Image (tube, rainbow, N blue to C red):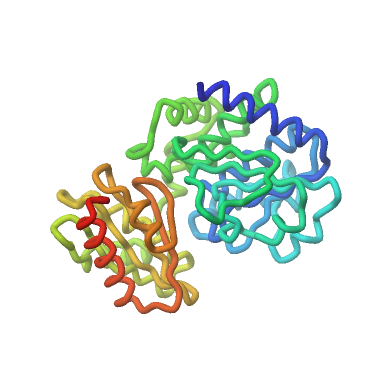
Length: 338
């Protein structure tokens, strides 16, 4: 029973937090709104239990900034609520707990060095464990059946204490994380997803306000439209395209949005969008139900979920990446893997 499991994990979280004084929370590098919202949810739990807590951040993406700004320079939140990953190490004490959300691979964490420096580590994630998953965590709750890290943390919030009262814009951030990771409740949404969303709505999450905060700026929208219009349909089923994020603040997020949009075209079973960013090629892979893109991305050293996955390639041109995707699909089709 999942509810029992959540209650057990929430109880364990509470016990660990009560035995320590200081909490450092981080998501994955290039954090998205699910990473931000779930980190915020854990921060709220830690504060409710009277602990010193900080959210470790590197780069702030365009999608996260409007949500983050609602906590900066506000009387109710301390100035050190968010700390830079560059000086996060200086916050480590003997009684520090590091809590990692929305990622379970050490190298993909926002500040991997914290995992080495701190003896008490907790992991909450909804991505399937991979070969380089974080080891030695005192509490690990990885649930690939959850839609999002925000869904998992929203459930925890209900069980950690006698119910935590959220402020409306805190609920907004958690709701936005669920909404984005489920593509507007279109994929991976189970009964728990809607129960978590209902809890957040009751705590003041505003669907219209969240929608407005999640809108694209004009340049990003044009880049998405361009990537969609240039896409190639391979084998009558796979849309492959390149997202040009030049001049955009968060190119990888634009690429992911383009991958989602390609699924709105009938006949497309899976989409693959390549985005060049900081000497790497990021591949966003999406599907509806017929193709397990997680398996495809695992062949390229990445991973994720059946319908949402990704990989990062280095020392590789865009043409080589397109070719690699095609060859991988050919081989998997031949072997009956997809």
